[in-house]
Image (cartoon, rainbow, N blue to C red; front, side, top):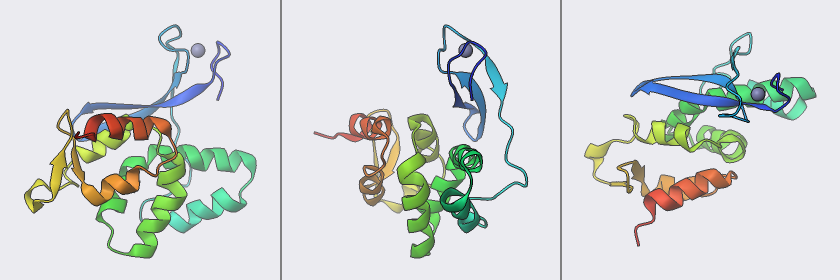
Length: 165
Ligand SMILES: [Zn+2]
């Protein structure tokens, strides 16, 4: 989506409170351009993390160009749920599908990842949790999964936060 100034708009993750977040469109030329737009979810609403995973993948693989862009945006907006379910899911075929088709190619915002890692999904009481430089929680196995994400920003964040040398 293009901003009125001509630059691309991108999805901005905003988490005012610990459990509370939203996405909106913001100009990629921020702070020079402060234009924002509301994100309108896909309709009908898909629950990509749990019920409608295969429907979302079908659109990714067989949909038209415009439909693909919409589903990729929706995957990014539902990434908190997708990551939470990936971490919690015990059905290998499902969590590997979420990981390979959605997390590897489309997880691109370290703030979204950090929001999930700081949330209740990483259970401190289990004893196999370690913490990064700013206190972010992590499981060892999860760390090696996440290092396979395509976005360099994610791997840079992981490296800086968890490099324990
Ligand atoms: Zn702009």
